[in-house]
Length: 347
Image 1 (cartoon, rainbow, N blue to C red):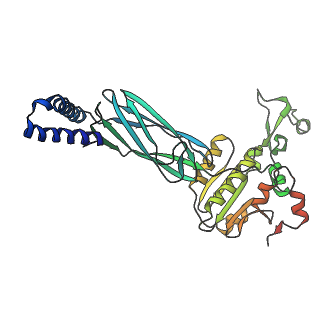
Image 2: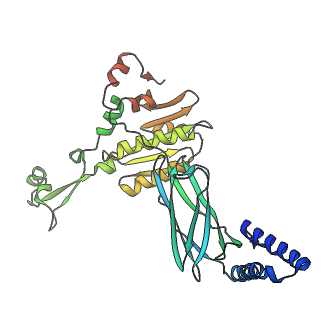
Image 3: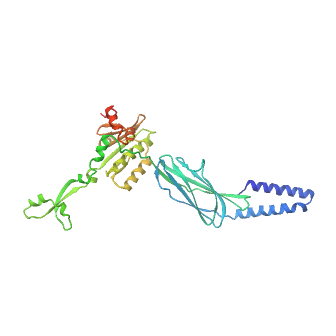
């Protein structure tokens, strides 16, 4: 508990008035000293009796670099008090409406929620908090600060670039196995009640001596056409690598391709759907530099390498600079790149 500047001023006036009253007599100064002294004592007592507020932080939704998120905190108190709430925003995050750390002056009554927006600046697992609450008496003479050490994390995904106009190797790879009519034949089995007649294999049934119907079963595109992306990078290149892999994985997932990702020693198996995309982005939000095994490089449908010379995407032993895939949106640059020999062959 400490005095505010106003409190120190009041204390100085009271002390000076008492000194003057000792020398010249108290009668003329009572009208000034007594109210100030009473206010000062009341401020000390009421501030000392304020209990520690209860702070409850709310979860922050993850998101990609460049988006904004809302930080919300609920503060519970026994009564109405004036408070200044100062929060801490960690590295990689930036308050939207303030130049420094967020400071909110408000009146907290029973259960009050405060909120402000932050910009997601850098990939990774970031933190908001700790928080401090400074309360004062109604006269603003005495204040007391409560520290709350609780923090809340926010996962920042790498940015995802649009690759819709990407070079021919990616377009071909995305198209293979994406259509539902590209199912592969698996086996024949006996017809069961409830089976669709469209799945009856009439040629095979006609050859059976007992005229029993048989049904053809197929391996789905997800089982037969899973796509693997493997990536590796040198130290200091992990942000660029994560953005490239996130863009490639999203590009294929949007075309109903099951995608699995291996980055260094971390991996997520092939699948589709929104939850799988979130799993991939969570992996890429935390990934650091690392190398692949030779087997992982050779088995990958798409290999991504990041080093001092940039990012290269290798498909069918053809290396394409990743920035060319991003720049080719709309298809304007692909033909020119191929004519100029910008697609290299990996030995």
